[in-house]
Length: 415
Ligand code: PMP
Image (cartoon, rainbow, N blue to C red):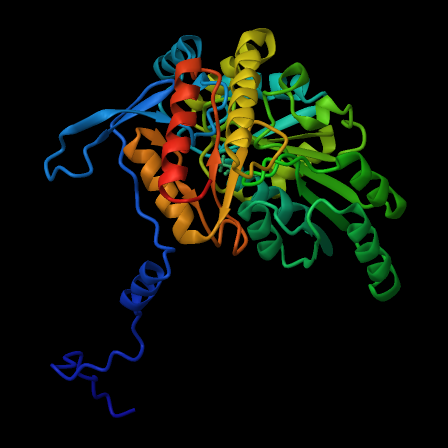
């Protein structure tokens, strides 16, 4: 060692070969019609929003725009009962949990919510996490499976859970139990002994609005003793007992892990797992996104609990939602649009990215907010507008949406 300290002054001829190049990344995404930007919103109501006028340089306020792209399906984020429960918890318990649930962050609000979720999901016990994303990543990695069998259109948080778990991931064709059976048969022949297998599927697919054949998936999994985990993010609160598709189809005893979010029909924030007592004991010790993360904010927990109560007891919201769904589906179909899905999520598939972008922009000009969904969120050639009506939309809102689709689609030659 000479003891000579290297100069830190690289001078004007600095070598940039070890740096990053976000400029090229961003420029390529822009030229490929794939760049996404934040969409500022100032005021949000149960059916509409006020955005700053995109044309004004100063934050002048634009007209009210009807939101048809939120996951707040029952409008409960703006329900007065839910808002009152949120405020009360903030005052009595605090704005934040202050620590991990395992340290000092475990409040009565969390426990009451977990009891109610377990009841709604007809499970022994539930555990809440700070987001749905953290729930999937935490639960999958905590189980530490050897092999996961995952539907090809599962949500990104499931995909990331699989990646982080380091399990061998077998992706099977979308909603195809026969493809799953074939993959399992192959693994049985070629895989190792005593492997632990986990089957993962969304119940309602977020971008397609279609429903997984969960009973058939359980049939296949049971042949091999594999566990089944179902992501009910887009179904929780919309079916029997405030549950999801698992409740609608009475599959609680066959699905080992019911996962969901508090952030969609329940209008709050957070995620949950419902299952057996021992599953929850395992997760609260081993799920790193639970152990090493601050507990769900008590106001969010309290909001979700009240929203779950309203979703269970007040059927009017659900009836309004399904009436809006039917009216939109019929109207769009009769205009000649290709509308997929079997649930409250109505994907209007136009195919080309640029067409989807143009349609989304035209809808916005007509004060309807329903942006284009493009790859990588959906497969190439299936770009779409994903319409998500809410229980709080009036019939006039739905008709305004239909009129906007008619005018925009005709102008662009899409219908
Ligand atoms: N699973 C699915 C199917 C989802 O659609 C989402 C959110 N888009 C999540 C999980 C993640 O939930 P959260 O937004 O609460 O993190």
